[in-house]
Length: 214
Image (cartoon, rainbow, N blue to C red; front, side, top):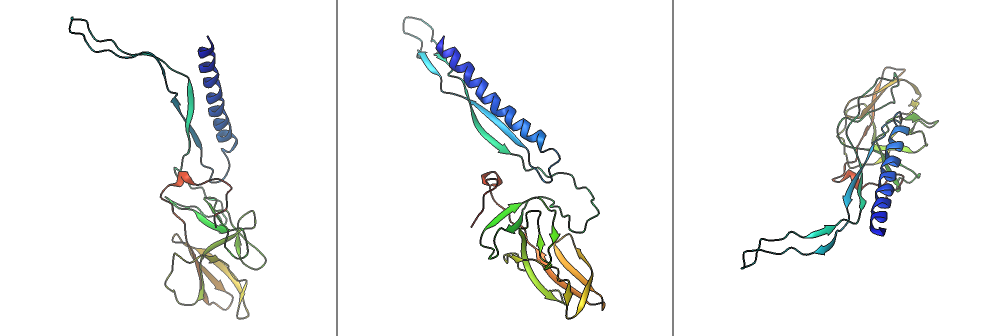
């Protein structure tokens, strides 16, 4: 009787975890770049009532083992990293990633504490730096040249779109599909200002939400 109660309770607890994950998925259905979770179950070790027996020399057939399961537990809560559909927003700084990869943002001025995100909604602060909604600066290979330089994807510096270069004010800017940032200034000069570099991981599921990486 107690065993059946324990098994039933384990089923209720694990299914409550599943409902919690489903509820979180529904709550974040309109959250930009949110990745849904999935719960996987596994049965617990079974208790053997009798071992298996092979056929006897007297002609008796073999006997299968007698086992009683101990219930169920959560084996994994996976994050599903399938790409979502791109939607136009009309903002030049609303970016999206096709395929794998994460934007890299720094939570400190020195750029030593990093976070990785798929949320590509960025803004310009008063100094021209690109920041997310929390004010963390977007990192990449930063330069300022009228000729296209070689991009180093390993460089991680705060990216900016200067409001003024050599006395000329910013007229417009664009970010192409490779992440290259280009600015056009009021004298007609075109500057290459930097390139957004993405971080990739062999095991995306090993990342922890809300954690900083040094």
